[in-house]
Length: 302
Image (cartoon, rainbow, N blue to C red; front, side, top):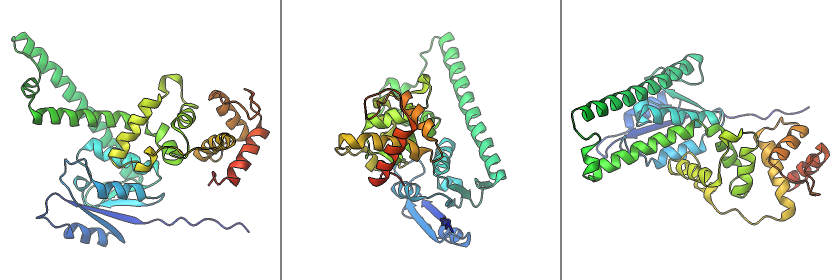
């Protein structure tokens, strides 16, 4: 009789206070009452991107776990940041719950609330863009120079504000494509070289959405900086024997989609323009099966 693997699910609490004068005790007590057996506390301002405790929590969250906070402002510095964190949890098969807000991504109602928040965030961005364009047009008709006076004067505070806004915009754009590359990077780096990881990522993507190596590495560094990927993915890839490269690539493809057929893997390898062990361009299921068996012996398959 085949034994089914038991998945342990847990509620993981996160509490944050802004200053050393504040205490996270009320939040921790509320999280404990909500059933959180594991609670992480952090002291950091709401606008601070550096949240080492939160980064560690997001990294260790496993499939089926739920990240719990008392209020969403304890977790995120903005609506876009909240959606970003939730997308990272969903990519790992985990959930998010706020005790005092109607958000629980494990329920249909919570997912609906999240969709409303996402629409509201997009609407807010559209209004800001429209007001900015109207304001600049009005200023030009009156002979005034548009833009931020602080930027023209190279004020450090103004420059920092613009830099952070650009970073947030860049992260939002990355989030739209995260499902294309984050799972592969998380599983394959640094075991595979960037070039091979890039081929696996681009294999199923249309040319318009394909990545370059420099663009991918920049995206990965941004996710490492914000704690959504472990720093180990940036390590230098180890030297791999020539005979082990193809098994590693095939294992990477299979690991991303375990139910993928041998023929589908053949098609993927051909789209990646990978040559067979004998140097041919046309792949056969038997060759893929042989490489998967070798990958298993090498410990490359889960």
